[in-house]
Length: 247
Length: 247
Image 1 (cartoon, one colour):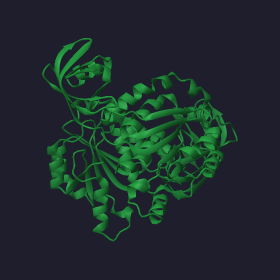
Image 2 (image 1 turned 60 degrees about the horizontal axis):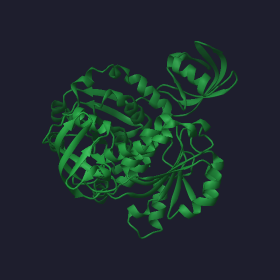
Image 3 (image 1 turned 90 degrees about the horizontal axis):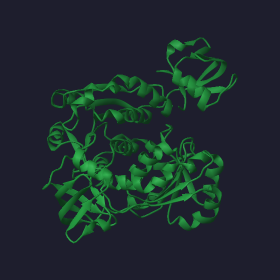
Image 4 (image 1 turned 120 degrees about the horizontal axis):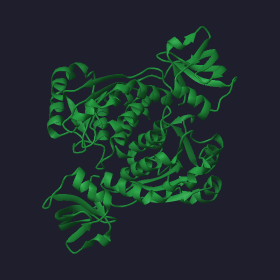
């Protein structure tokens, strides 16, 4: 937790309060903060800044001298379409994509997604994982998350309207590598490197996409690219791919 | 587990056997494989290939028709020097760096490493985590791992002999970004992009490096670079940075 994010309702004039259990525990146990200490805070969907601790009780921490000094960092111009992973790794994946600044996340069904994953109680906790990711990445603006339980209708009927720019699908058996793809785009464009990165990336979960899915995506203009022969855990693959947007 | 790696001792002529509990469970429960089925296998420090299941008992799976068809993928020309992280995340970090093909891993003390981490029983299980990473990334050659419990003597007395090429330290407060650094190297070199990547990267754990550590590294020629304003979990940062070597 690199900042403490509070909803607008917790602010009034120049004061605010923390009442979420996890945040109170963080202030007391991780930061070991006392009355008079300064905390890094932010307002959800608002700005980032600092506050002074005015009072600490077991259920509530009162803050004063709220000072908002910076706007949140810009979001990446990027939609990640992720095959719904095992519930166990969903929390960390949502946290990481949020911390990295992905603007849109679409969790989609795939041939290798087990049906039971869609019944997981973890899917009702996405807001909580997003908050963790924002507090990790020091951001205040949540990504938009949508769920797509049917792959084919989404790809055939909705995808064309969502692709605003280049789209790729990560696939270990693709002929083209990510860097070759970027090089091709660079050579056919006058733009600096940042703006030729894709604006949409499909990433499979354990086992990846099947050929039929990759072919269906190709028909909509999604280029299949690989990131090398090595097969990575879903979390590792997502971070290794999204790292390209950061550096 | 994208392949099953066995030590040389488990092979004889054209047959071999699996006797590790985790591997037997994987064959039975994840793969649901039967006698006559083909498995992807590898020999530790050797080659990759396939084998046919000859017999399955609760304690042992016998394999026949061993066929080695490919050499393991090349290692990355890279040493990662990682501040020893919380034991809880050590397993996944070692797995991921191994799966990504890092050739040398040095776990080092840092100001923000808690002393208790060095007493963790997880440190005696590194071989197990490496095996998991190799079986994930489909590789047979373990990275070399060493532990350095003293930061200053290592940096001042040993580092100079280990830096064979460019070295960087990941630091969120550096002025230069990773991509600016790579661009600088490109402009002062005739090499293609791959070969101008650093051969050594220092990555902090939770809380990162302190200024004193970054300055000590700078004296040995390690350039501090950032990967953006967003602060990532150690695992996410490692994968986001190492992704640059893959693509």
